[in-house]
Amino acid sequence: MKILIAEHAGFCFGVKRAIEIAYEELGKGKKTKLYTLGEIIHNPQVVKDLAKRGVEVLEEKDLYKLSKGDRLIIRSHGISKKLYNFLEQKGVEVIDVTCPFVKKVQNIVEEYYKKGYDIVIVGDKNHPEVIGVNGWCDDKAYIVNSVEEAENLPFFERLCAVSQTTLIEKHWEEILQVLRRKAKEFVYFNTICDATQKRQEAADALSKKVDVMFVIGGKHSSNTQKLRKICEKNCKNTYHIESADEIMEEMIKEHEVIGITAGASTPDYVIDEVINKIKSIKGEG
Ligand code: F3S
Image 1 (cartoon, rainbow, N blue to C red):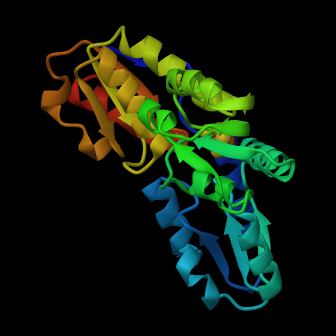
Image 2: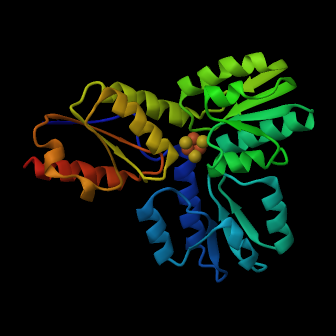
Image 3: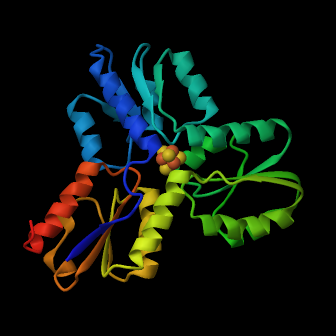
């Protein structure tokens, strides 16, 4: 039996940084309550561990509960400009771990919106990152996630397009072809982050070579779901799992080459647990 790990897998730079800063903040031993706006990463194990240490997850609708001096961690997905203003007015201490790559998208959107461009965000309108980015152009962006949706856009004088950082490159290229025809003046920024691209390329390459492919990551993690989609195209025995507990003997017993990739929110120890579980089922542990 062979276990192959994708060349790029697991924690990306932005998530690693976010987690490190969160634990650093805990280590300061401050008395004021520490919250995160939404789960800090799409990883149930990490979220549980933070909860054990007293970190509470708040949804946006519950932000009114915060008091002056409370500390709130803004996760790597980022937030809207309006929300920063609201938190400032409330006197909340903001620990901002917005990924610098997401910050870059927010800055582009703000800049071009101010210059009078209409904004198109290519991505999932329900994803917190996209909702946050839209908040840098007064929530006026057109959000499209398919060629059809792009076709249905009106014609613009001046248009600026950006992508959700976790978009699949090919998907962006297809939609871009349509957007090019939709404006007199068109500027676009491929803001798909390097980490995403590398994970996707590595998952694509590996899933072509294996009998079974495990994609590890939170079930709600959009970048993990995309990795699963990529792998499914190449390997029919692709499983999206959150932890080693989900691996059943029948998934691997008749197979010899097993591939592993992991979403950007998956800590290394979860990947190690998966490797150990496979080895123990195969009697090689
Ligand atoms: Fe940032 Fe890319 Fe990760 S945008 S949070 S480094 S997937």
